Length: 502
Length: 123
Image (tube, rainbow over all chains, first blue to last red; front, side, top):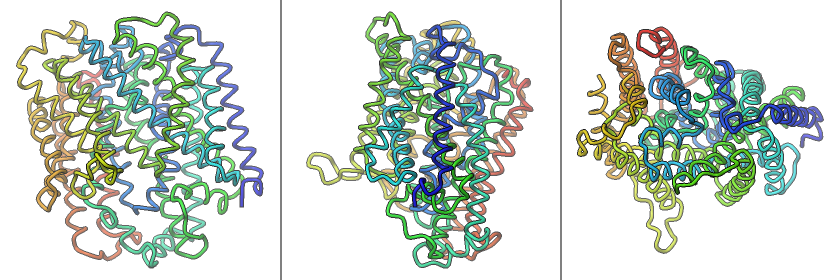
């Protein structure tokens, strides 16, 4: 069965894409300066920021990758989303106010801009920009992969490359014309769609599976899944489960797609409600992960659905084969929204890293950043699509790598650096480099144990490269800062010192 | 409070790295105990300000105890072999995971942040 048997799915997807293009064109007319393009003129309110942060953070990772990962790992996959109860508050306490006030005093458009303001070092800024580019390529690749899998399942086509290309084209079109003004307003619409769809999909999933009791009962009683599927440590080692909890519970402090939103807030006093809006909206969206993650294995256990060849097909297969047509149409549009809201944030963040941050680390400034930012979008999008196509694993695992790259490279230098004046540029630079190199190195070692000079897995069973690199990055930062004494304090600009000391 | 936070970060982070390379039973326990303390230490670092509210210390203590109780609860309940299904057809360790690690911080932290917003110099 394909979407053509349920035309409402096609209409829903097309209506959504049309709405996004209209908003993109409308925003294009409002985008006059690079400040408009990168941080939406710092004129956005708390609801747009809160829901926008949620929709930028929750992407194809949650709506497609989550159910897919649950299909493979069982409820242990939920360790990824459990920390959202405190991550909203942590973001605001640790970085929110400081980044917002910094953006009010200086020309701060990007995370590397904030690193530059904090450490005053071109080479540290350059490393941060490299980390952003690297993580952006992986994260954007995840969105393109998710888009391709969704369109493939919906339209019943065989070619993943073709559907990825189609999705990429639409994404680039409206990101290029709209920039962050489009991003901010489409994020709001997309956020609302995601919330409504998450609740509706959850209810439908549990209903189709025969109710909560029948759903978990059939999973527990099946030979394929069994009780271990429902246990937190039933199908994964301790290091994997708590590694997810650690990386996703701390790593938000290094995610530019979320931190970037703080620059856009019109009034810092509105931060008061940010954790409530962010955490509550995230918690509602996680219902999709939980509902589809349990309903699809349950349908397989009940013999109503063939075992999935690819776990990432869990969500689209359910929507196309089991959901009511109207809900399926809306849900597909909402999943498109989830994917594209994150992707367009990354396209703009990546283009800013290319046209602002990297050139500055080499000592020059690009003259027309607005124009070149739009050109950079094309290069980043193409690189991301290629990366995703050749990565070839579950959406959620690519997401963990991408999230972990940002986390390990940027979280320590930002979170500790903006709360401790003693952190030196050397400590920050070494921490960023450690996070980047260790994460990529361990990922390669874990994935290619048989390739010649590449060593096999170095870690204990189930230990995540991203967890090790994040902890290593913190260790390096603290160690170098501790042995540097008070030298770091002298390098901090007065306005930044006031921010740090509160 | 910020000094304790820096000590936790400085000692805890290398322990996590070490545990992941060494493996074994003791390393798993260290990993489960230490990882929940890192986010609490980071919040403490960000929230401790001169003239800030002392309530923040109690909030963070409650968060640390909640996360530790949930993590250790999952670890030890999970070791009991095939678990009996309890409320809602889910194993006890899964309920601990969802409620203690997920729901309790969700109810605690956003509300406390809003309540302490002015008092902790966040405005």
